[in-house]
Image (cartoon, rainbow, N blue to C red; front, side, top):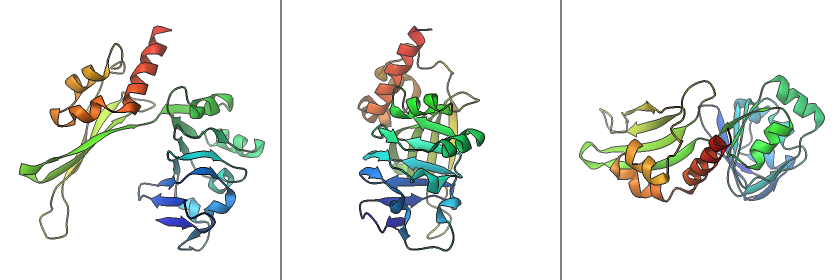
Length: 220
């Protein structure tokens, strides 16, 4: 985890998968990439995916230049502006950068205007415990460019020794057109365990996706 020395509301959460999440409020600026604990060299180059979470409203001039090597940029629905020079945009197209976000959002508009690939965000569906197995499951609806969507289960269980963890992960493939005519109630009934039903019925991100996807399908 890194903390911006310029703005104490800006926090970076690093993942071993190459994902870097930035949390905070307002518009990010280049100075927000000066962080503690300090590291030698260009610390941002350790990550190939930058996820800008809800609460942040824009990427100011020079900010994205500090991440000029990334291959995927995830923009939450609160982001309304991204400042990027013609040179940076050219570099992004050359690297075939993928923009991810919600349908009908600034992220999709940004990708379209700048001739970049776009893919809908994965949607966090919820988490639950299976007490008898001492198992904790995290469930996500995932989208892929070249394959069908799936429901991904990341399962955590106690390991064979104190302080270790077992578990694993698996994915349940979905039809490419699973959303057609699918309401939030149908999704909860057909695709998921009863343990997640209430969380699904109140999942605003999933509601927005199903509505937008069906509207687009109707226009075909």
